Length: 250
Image (tube, rainbow, N blue to C red; front, side, top):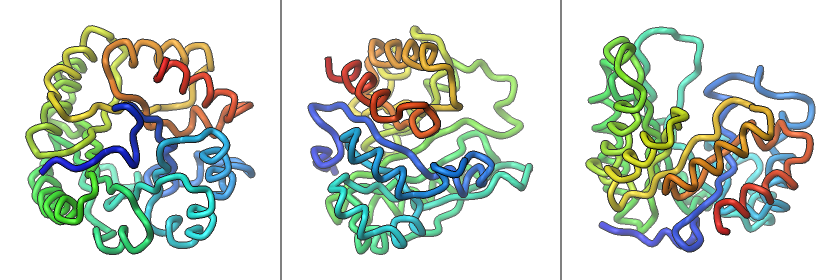
């Protein structure tokens, strides 16, 4: 079922502000300012982002401020810590109904293809996708190749496999990691078909290096970025957001 992406995209493109790092990476990612979710919500509002990405706890505890910002909310439905170092698996911790009750305009779910537990996550995603589409909201799949079975496979090949997986399982948008090769990304966008490709912002980079990557990503045909640390760890998050927006839409 095709759903309307207009609430979280503009003219087929988007810029999301991601802030699911507290669970996935721990508070080591934060400083005194960006440890506060209200600071992130203010950046999203001033930067006029298409959506904010939170886990359910922040979406609940800061719901009033999120609603006042008028920035659409995307809730991640699964998650894990980075403490366990075995084969990765991320299980559902929030329902579609709970996300909708909190005002979500879309839901997201991470799948680690190549993990011995990929079938568990694919099955869970299937149930989420069916319920979300029945309610008329988009589903975003974070798809990352992980696990011992993919450690020696070429990065470009894995990026394309991640993109194609999103199309095959019915995701409306897929979030993948860019390997730094424009030719590889163009192929990944091609094999994703009608599924929109968003690129993860990645680790905090020098601003010039980061903006160069953004230009490559947009020129390769991606729909935009879901960026976190490169924005809220920068010296001027709103100014940098404006530079990225101009690259995406101009």
